[in-house]
Image (tube, rainbow over all chains, first blue to last red; front, side, top):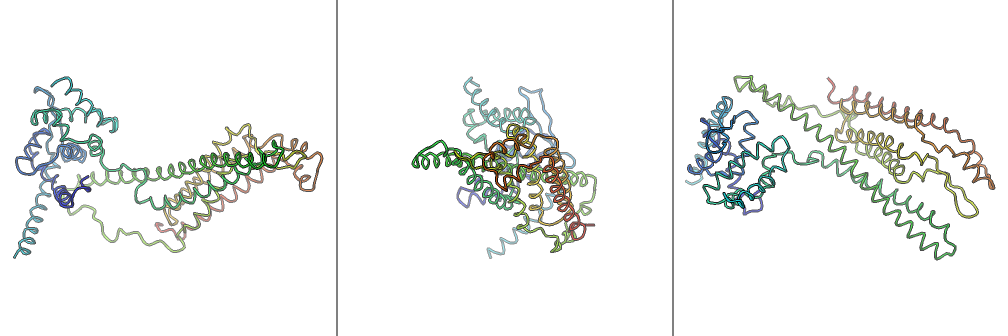
Length: 114
Length: 361
């Protein structure tokens, strides 16, 4: 919990928390293993802590948005996650929500500036 | 990876998985092992990877998700309110009675007044503090147990509802068709006559707890006390030799009564759950009481004999009446009273639920 930290970082954390599911779903059209996803998101400027991501992946799998399988051919066993068709449907809906929300936010902030 | 690094990783995996449900441990262990080795490659060392992952307890909490409390905010208010009553009603009377019995038991052995005072008070206080602490802990445990069960049952109901919802959503193509909350979902405010006041619950709880606390911790309190030349004689009413057989049955029936009161308190008005709880609990209490009174060796079999011996010299009017003690008749009378009270309470509950109950259909 970040509540004990200074108010700004707690607020930033809260702001990001809402976007986690959307950012994770966006990268899982094709199968990916957990740490590759961490690095991928970080490269795109949307960092997520591994200790937040792994439990989140499991939860999304439990909700039927993701599916996983173990790949044992490589040098070490890896668990790959991928969107299910239900997950893709939800992702599409979330994406539309995000577009509306961010357009609205842009407008709000722009008006405030001028 | 060095042996030291592997050891560190094993420790971390153990610290996370030991906090998780058994069914999840192996899977989480494998996926964290994959993660840690990947991170170690990127960060340069296992230490760096583990430092970034942070406290394993926190990690386990995130895996476990919500529902990590015994009694949630929804019930906490009722829980604290009831706990206060129960603690006061169990600790104070048990303290008082244990003090008194402790003093009485210790005093006759002393001859001078100083010895009587000092030994009597210290024996009484020791007895009182020990018994009151036991009574308080038991009461705390009983109340917490009942609330925890209610909490779990409610949680189970919620989860089932959620499952049904998501299956329904999967079947439905259009999102607009999803059941959405509308003001029509609001259940009506219960009829004033259907509201169960806290004061009513409090009266019930006070009686149950008082009786229960005394019987649990001072069964010898229920006794005929006879003055004799060299002090007083206690003639227990109950069969204390068989007490370890009788007590569990008795405690169970008291716990059921308490559970019924708590269900009333939590519901707050007469509804089907309260009615069902009342029927089930009262029927069980009647059955248990019948077992206790008719089938178990509840009464002191030598009560009349001991009383006669003790009263030999000073047979008074009241004592003479007690000599006509008939355990069978007393059992029947008490059982009849219990059946009557239970039937009355269940009857009132059924009537009020059907007449005014808020969720009648």
